[in-house]
Length: 287
Length: 187
Image (cartoon, rainbow over all chains, first blue to last red; front, top):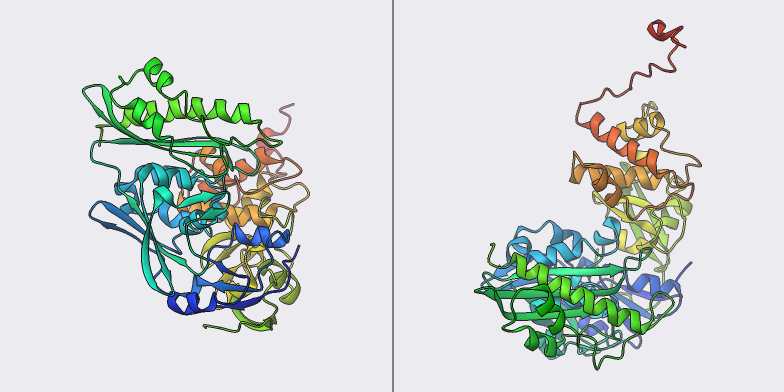
């Protein structure tokens, strides 16, 4: 399978790349492991690919106070091998091992996954649970987009058409918190039928705060804020947590396909949220 | 080399494959696996699914195992590539991973084998002493349609022992060897 014909440009800076996006129907190529499959199926037929893979200095993980800064070309494999990521956000290191397979993880990028906003992608859930921002560069310069409002709809983000992610800025896991990613995957593709990431702080045996990201359920990854609020103050006990997470799919346009009906996905969301919260709470206070 | 053409056209791709330099003209949509197979004539790298599922097209690009069906040839410009043809020594002596496949019957039809060998190379460099579960997980991105996974996993574990020096390059084969009189008449 070949993609439709396109022109290819490999700029040497992000600013040059932004300028090239003026061309009609242009797409940014990073790891290419979401985009090229779509192009082979002709679901995407850009006229110009702007390859940011030759721009120097875009592959890094850096800890800046409470933030883990991850460059646009940093792959899942890079994150899995990063000491900075392991200390700032061990749940991210766990979750990247759940993406695709080793070869895919060697090319696919975190920034690309977030920009692609696949409704069944793993990393949007983790990014939402950690919180943070997306640093994007456009013709007017740089701006930071809050992750909480970054995912807009299926395959749609708050990025402008002529904006490129320079850096993903994730909040480090708060001191004393615990975090976990729980996923039920489609066994052939390893995409998440449902995936839930929870970051939980515990005081005196009760949950003091929880942030949760859910993927695979609706058209976009989301934070079930009502569940986060319901968990606050609850004892770290199975029945209490189970009761608090029951509304995790309420108000969501739960998707159905040949792999899972909407009812089943909503059920998975409740089960996996309970498991992720309990696992995260069990890890709290241990680092 | 930065290239900033915005009209469709041909691009020059220069790569080193198994130590040999090559330079060819490609369309931007040429996939790396077809560049290697059809433009360089190195057909050991296989195309199984063409959708980054099966891993038969796995190569090392700048030392890391990747699926060459999901990479454009233009993305590989300047890269150092190793394909299955780069594993055995020029005289024909097998790489320890290949030797392990030979001894453990790690291939049936052999179609998936090039990708398996390259992926196991990556796996054993990342984790020289993997458990069986770690081998199975490391081969998540490689399919064998003969379903010969048991012996592929055995081959990977044997290759690990060979590379760690815990097993000789050629495993003594007492059951089949003609020079094994001690077992003669045992039945």
